Length: 256
Image (cartoon, rainbow, N blue to C red):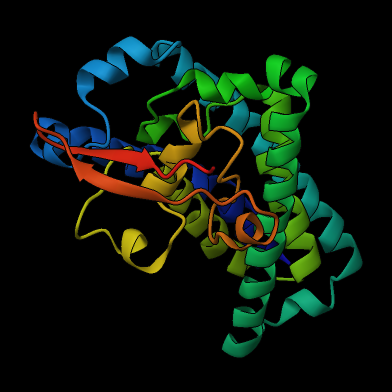
């Protein structure tokens, strides 16, 4: 039982630690990776509607609420599956849990995300906070209104964990992976050596379309696949062009 509790604590706080370490890595690269930026530094400074210090405070608040819900989810499952948690599942079973969790995670986020954009009240008072970052950057990935963050990100994680039946130990890796993927989707960079940009169609360029004005009601899918956008006609394709001053530019292929 002590090991289970320890796994639960790790699954709650390791993704938060990784969030700041991984996003900090992007910041540490500095100007050396400007040639891979999807927007210039000038655009980031002039178009974004919220200062970085406020973004940091918002993310810390979001993570505080997220950790509370995470611990509650673990407590609920520990009360109902004590005997099953004594033995770790096989690799095959864990893989199945991961796939189910990814599907549930994506499904919840797609529909909640879409609702947030189509309901004017919810967008104005909640989700518009996230879109104050017109030019996304790594450590702003989890910048949301607290309620928006709970309804989309935190709830999707809790539901994915409960529905998939994965163990607390497996969830350490799943939530860390999801956190890194979310940061990458908001990093504003198309790095040629980044495996996420190779294996996932849902990447920084794909999500950049969504943060542009014309694409704000398209490309809702996050963080893993683009299936629901294609199924429900909200998929917007794009091209990646070189900017004369250096870096890249994502150009949405506008629908007729």
